[in-house]
Length: 228
Image 1 (cartoon, rainbow, N blue to C red):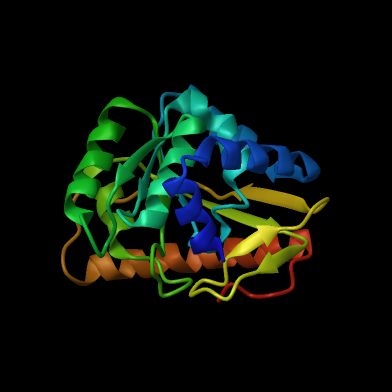
Image 2: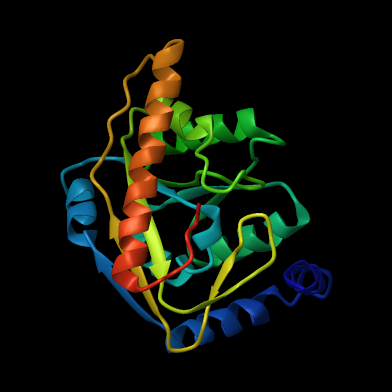
């Protein structure tokens, strides 16, 4: 259903209408955050960051993400037809879409994200997208941090009530009058050069940290179904 809607919107040029409807819909949803002040202070001190989030939660975080447009964020989006719709939406949120994924155009997209971080302070990375497995961080996140020198900041997004789609990631759509919670973790520094087992050890450690943050945020928000 969601794929059909996105293709219909693309075919008939209805993305501006769909975008306006989604923004209006999110006015029915309450958003609160934990740790946002520390996140902003990181940039105020001249820091850079890669915000790491799960694919399942990208719609939930969309409206909240617009608060950070001042930092000129980039986000990697797949080169699929569905990615065309998502990229257009994020442009309207004043994000810079970088097209590519682990399955297609990944090397060029990674280089573009690293180049972006050389000039601007913020990148957002969907750590298990675009095809999963759900809840498994891919190596691109670690490579991006390694090459750019920007620390990884885990961001857990939860909601107390949502519809769950029958997709690979069990994608969440918040219900009207639900509450969304965004929680920021502590920055994770990545060494400039990782070799052999050290790369996988760090990837696994970051995954464990983000999973734990997600589980505690889900409990705080009252969401019952585990991401993992």
